[in-house]
Length: 545
Ligand SMILES: Nc1ncnc2c1ncn2[C@@H]1O[C@H](COP(=O)(O)OP(=O)(O)O)[C@@H](O)[C@H]1O
Ligand SMILES: [Mg+2]
Image (cartoon, rainbow, N blue to C red; front, side, top):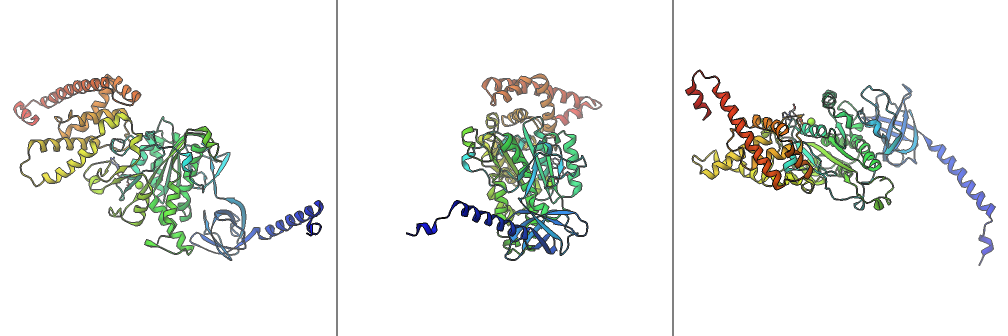
């Protein structure tokens, strides 16, 4: 064998390596600077960056203004790159120089962002000065694998009776809020954020393709309710480039993931809404000349949403297991996702709605008809579900609300039927009366989230027939007074429910007694009220019957 011929001395190896390294640097330098060929609709064609990575941040310097804009390498083609410009592309021109950064897209992360309004790149939009984050995290990230997760088991209280009782949401779950325009979708998400006040959940609200004025009034509300103390608002408005609208949810998700991965905290992400994000992505893809598929959306639109929503997770509590993960530093964190989808004329069978329904763990379906009939939140109980939240629901709530969904569904059926039937038997009448009252109990105004123990108490009263003799028109007033009464006169009942997480026999007996006591007071007050304008007592008596 020609051993001697192939053997290299140490110095020869060194020389060869040094030569390699030198040549490598030469190549890199020759390719570092590229040039813009063309800019249209937020997409820049770039020439001369043959070694750029997919999703790498490129810096384009505008020859006109001298400002640098970040673009994302989205299409790596043979002789050019299609890059989506994350910022103002109107000043960019053919011939502007482009520099590689060697970094894939990342955003600043950390608690410095809490209380702030930022664009998807983490730049402040609220005029409260610069944000000095110490860390950055990559925006595209693989969702944690099954080994690092554990099943959803803690509730994420929305504060809304209809949701917490019938479609409970667990921490780490993905629950879709779907409905037409103006059916109260945003309202549910915002109430949920407000309800986390004083709790341990960091909320990230991502506004996509909305009017700047809508975001401004939402912000004003969150501030007034003291909810910005635990929230970050990420906004890519309708007037912003489609590119920013497209990346916004991933950026917001990353900001939340920091708290889940690095601090082991609970987080909530609202994506309002993903229909607009899909439209932005469609626009970009068409400009990038990716082939259009169904409804002209690109073929990977499903992947677009699934890789975002997969990142919702409940991280394991086992410290040994997370040692195997490069990014998870603390155990037990969670990211709950509330994506929102806007339908057209209630069409849930369209492309994007069906996609997102299939990716999430349940949906809260809001209906126009109910909304205008005054049933708000306008949740259609029949087709709204939460596939995993039940196991996370407070046992006390399960105890009182077990039959609620079924009862309401039956009521809706009977109600339709009763419109035609002249005479109804007493059992049916009773069922109708109960249903009417439960619908009334589940109505809830905006910005009035209710602590879970109070939800349990009033639903208990309803499902156990204590409201059957209260006029439907009086239910709202009854409920408001009942909550103050329970707080003032029997705080121990609420405390017991919250503390024990269930209704023990003892608590139930106390609750029942308290309800009876309150009802007596309520009816007495009502009799007095109707009796006061006692000009014609006879008439007054008739009206109370
Ligand atoms: N529970 C509610 N009670 C009363 N008004 C509500 C309720 N939920 C929503 N609204 C009102 O309905 C309108 C539409 O709500 P919004 O959440 O903006 O709808 P969407 O996000 O579906 O377009 C808003 O003016 C809002 O104030
Ligand atoms: Mg909305």
